[in-house]
Every structure is written in C-alpha cells, then in structure tokens.
Image (cartoon, rainbow, N blue to C red):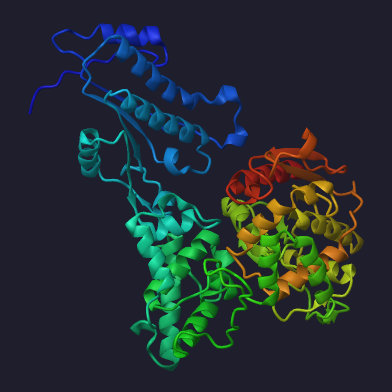
Length: 593
C-alpha cells in the first residue's frame, strides 16, 4: 500500500475566500485531483418547524457550490468531484426537510457540472452499518449498507458516466408497500423488483401452504403460532410469547404500517390472498388465526365473504366492500360527495336504533393503547368519519408508552351488527359510562381530532352532568361541521379520509351510514364550556391555501391554551403524531401541577 499523508485545515466551506486560501496552500508537487464533499447528518426537522434562517443544513449544498466555483477558477485538473448525500433527497423522509433539500441541490449541482463537461458524481446513500443502527430504517425496508459494499459502490459510481447514483440495500417487499401506503407513487414503478411485486399481487399463489393444511385444532394452532410469530417479528420482539393471543393488535402497538407488514408476511407464508384491513377486521392474534384457519379450510375463501360490487370501478382500484362503498368511490371521482351524503343519510334511517345504553348491549368497551406511571389517563374519542375508531390513536399513543396510560373509546354504531344511537344522549351516555367504568378513580383527559373533537367536547360536558368531570380536554384542529372552511376543503378532506381509513378499516355500509347519522346528530356547533381546562392544538399547514388569504386556522373560544404543531389536518395525527403526542403530554403535566 502507498503511504498517505493527511493535512487538516479549518475553513468554513461556504466562505469563498477561506476555501480559496486552503486550496492555494496545496503543494504544487501534490496537486488537487479530487474533491469529496458530504452533507452532514446533524439534527433536522420538518418544514413546519423551520424558519428561513434555520435552514442551516442548507450550508452543505452552499459549500458544494463554492467548491465547484473555486476549483473552476483555479483551473485545477480534477479527475473526480464527489458529493456524498442521502436518499432523503431522492424520495424524501419524515422530519428531514432540511437534509432532503440539501441533498436534492447536490444532485442538481452534479447534473450542472456534467452538462459543462466537468467531472461530477453525486451519490445518495441509504443508511450505513454503524454501531448505532437505526431499527426503524430496517423495519421500513432499508437495510444498512456494509462497509465493503460502500467502498465498491463508491468506486463504481465515480468511474461511471452518470452524474447521480443511489446506493441503498432495499428490501422491496417491505419498503415499497410502505412507501406507497397512502397513495400511488410512480418513482419506482419501472424497477424489476417492484414490477415483480405488482405481478405477485395480481397473481397470488394458487393455494394455502402446508402450514395451514392440517385438520381441526392442529390447523388453528398452526395458524395461531404463525400469527404470533409474524407479529412479534414485525414489532421487533425476540419472542412470540410477548404477543398474547387475546390481546388486541392496537394494544400491541400495531399501526397501519405494521398491519400491512403482518398481512404481507401472512400472505407469503400461507399463499392466501388477504384484504388490506385483515389485521383490524380480526383485532386479536387468536381472531386472526381463526380467520386464517377457516379461510384455508375453505380453499382460500373465508366463510361469510361478501362478493364485491364493482359498479364502474376500474381494475386498478381497491376492491369495494359493499354497494355504498362503490357509490362513495363514484361520488368522489365525479365530485358529487354532497349528493352521496344526502343519499346515505336517508339510508341510515332504516338501521336499527338503540333508545338507551342497555338496549345497545351495555356501555362502550375501551381499547388500551399505552401504559405508564403518569397519573392522568388520556382517552382518545374516535372521530365521526367512516374510518373512525380507536385505530386513529395508535400513532399518538406510541411515543407515550412507558410514560402515560392511553386508551380510546369507539363510537356506537360503527361496528358491524351494532345499533345506531336514536339520540345524541344515547351516543354520549354509551361512551361516558364506558369511560367511567374503565377509568375507575383515575383522572381523565379527553382527546378529539376534527369531528372527534366536537364529540369529545359534548362528551366532556355530559361527564360533568354525570358527576364525573374530566380533568382536561384536548381539541385537535377542530372546526364546526358547517364551517365554510370545511366546505372549501371538501375534496382534500374526502380524499384524505378515504386514503387513511382504508389503511385500517374497510369503508363498509355500516361505517358510511353511521358517519352520516352522526353528522345529523351533532350538526349544530356546541357552545364552548369554560368549566373544562382546554388545550387547542392547531395544524401549522393548511390542506390548501384558502381563497382570499383569510385565516384558515381552527379556533375555540374557551381554549385556555393554544399550541401549533407540525403538519396539516391529517399529518399532525400521522407523520407528525410524535410531536403532537409530546405537546399533549407536556400540557397534561402542567395541568396537574
């Protein structure tokens, strides 16, 4: 090996004079032949948390530009100009706005140099194998690139003709379904691995694997072992014993991404074709195992399966689950949502009604989502959209595990076979009695988002009337149902609700009729009640800039505190749920002092 000398020189790479001075000091007998410049991996944040002056990581791209200009001016005989950046500049990354922009600028600079006939290679790297490996990246399908691969890929990229390259060890079966979970993204459509995945979805394996080919109790036990082992692997547990058969998936921490991974793994293991919502249709490992065993016994068709009604749906759309679901899709595609809701509102009147809590089968059963030493119990009040349910709060609860108890209360009538409440009082009493029984003597803080916030406020008032007042109330991006802003955003709201609901639950007739029924029950805006300590959480981004530049942010006259959190109406509860959860946790701690 050749001896290598190393010289360290301190200079701000964005300072043209400083860089020029450093380069001028290079000995003539050892001329500059290559430049390597990297984007730092420092702290980052989403766009909503940054001001223009805080885009410090953008200096990485500024430094690359200075190096480009100075080396051209010095007429150095460069053989390589290498820019090291991250794949976040290619396909983005939650909370990595600064780095993504800087990396994209690196690619643009490499392309510019290439057009000038100058050497340039911008390499966007996936995660590297380090002592502090990121388990979230591996879970999402990005395996760490090993050191020997880094060096060989670097040599190949620099020697190649293309100005930009991506080097990442991608598990496409994990990464691509997660990347396209909310909507179709065509970036990777032409890759052979992705095309093979798409073909596998269109042409699933012909029948159940041998693991479910057993008879009677043996088949169910095999299915249960498979489900528990799969869930444990997806959740990062070392032992399937941590996945109790009768514990709800939501309580285990299964969010929409984990549910999709479990479903995909089960399909590969069994050869069965399973709906995207199968994990939440069968909410415990035992229930899902029974479904798998019954499906295998029936040759791939579960008992009681309802054939889909297609009514003009294109082959590329998800399979509808009922007549109203099909009509909902048609209404979305033709801009006739208002007419559709009027139709479903009339249909809902034919559903059986409960005149009291006893007739509804007893009070609500809450779903536990997290536990911790904090005194106050945070309870999510499910929203009023067709996708409403305890699953809305899984991401919110995840950062609070080990810190605060969190549970969620459903809405009466959304589950198959449930009665609708005949009056608002029945709906509220069903939830209030369930909360009181679940909480016992624990102080309760209610949390509601969007339409669920309207319901949470009504529920808080009802609990005061029942002699069990909540300790606090958190309203996240609340708007009255008749707010003009909601009408202006109707297309964005409908599309967002539709995309997110289908990550968890099917948009079946029960949910669609319940949604319109509750819209009628709670249409009038409630009077804010100053007796309840209230936090208003507001999204920092609009779904779309409002006409006339008017203020689009939600408001609540009785709010004691107002906190703006990252994201828009939807992403504040999804991609930015961690920040939202921490804001709620801090407020409750201050409330208790």
